[in-house]
Image (cartoon, rainbow over all chains, first blue to last red; front, side, top):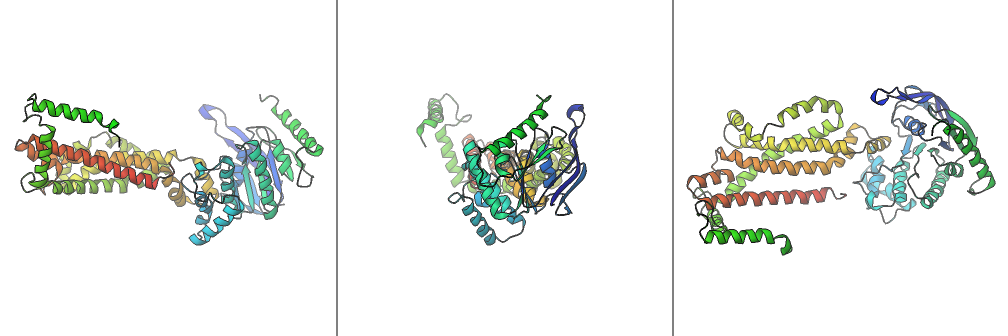
Length: 254
Length: 251
């Protein structure tokens, strides 16, 4: 029992006099430490809002977010976040971006450099230390962003569709890479995606959210051992089950 | 540098020289390019008024612009950062700026002479006013152009307000800040010469030099002075652009 959300409410003021938009209305869920849990749901259901609340970027209107028993309010060193659009600083090199969090933590320059170089090596970025983000491919940019987050050794890593803008081959490679990282590090990952295949391939557990206001429709264990076969019958069954849940939620939306 | 870009100005110069040599323009109204070059040589060697040579005029003018522009940058950039970063500060200050901005810097000359007398402080103040507004407004535009996503990402890495400003908003706004600095410097340089027309205490300054040349009917030296002002402005802008390429290499 490690990340727990109870009774989370969140609505946004409606624009031009529209009624407020209820995104979360009493959402409860829990994520056990050390697991990789995916969150899937219809588009616009509030997956990203949920993640932003956990990250402390957005306050919940009501409800509690606890990590290891302590309330999370505001960004914390214990929680890291990876964004779909990478969010790298365009004026910093690979090394400069990876060192960013260490600067905030007050580390000396030499220590920062040494730590960042280790990550450059481990993340397959050697030779691109001094490149600016716009000189890197999408997959490399996302590796820089993940390195920048993981170098701070957060206990909980939030990922908001991190591979959503990558082509499918790069995406597959990044999924494998993420799994190998996670298996070494034993941290907890909450992974938001709209891609059911990705959720089935990666996760220990999948939370299926309803349409807005989001609640947890189903909590599915993924028992298959890793490395997984993306096309195994068990994967296909699970995928079918999730897709049919999502399809019911889409009725009346389109 | 290829001749292709320069043939038009060169052709115009040749035409100008030809018309002057044919006596189409009276030399006391429009001196020929060669006469202007001779005037430039006179300014550099003998000076105008005699004894006060060109390089000293140039130096004093640069000093005035340097002082006014430095003050504008030192106040304008931080103020723009604060106004861009904090909507509340922006709402508080921007009516004041919007009200003062349309007043031309030259319209401040009488009151600034009253306040500061004739000399470096009043000229510096006029240049400050000319340079200040473009610097503030472009800095604000630069800060608001920084993607909120970058700010959020840096917050999740543990950045506080001060670090967000220093590590995200300032570098993110830098391209726009340079636009503001270049415009501000250009306006400051233009304003300077006008400020010097109204008088200088030291007896030096390009504007003062030109007015003296007019008083004793030397159109060649007037136009040589104008050419020096134009070329100096071009050089200053080139230097700022060089600095920009150094400091904003990711663009």
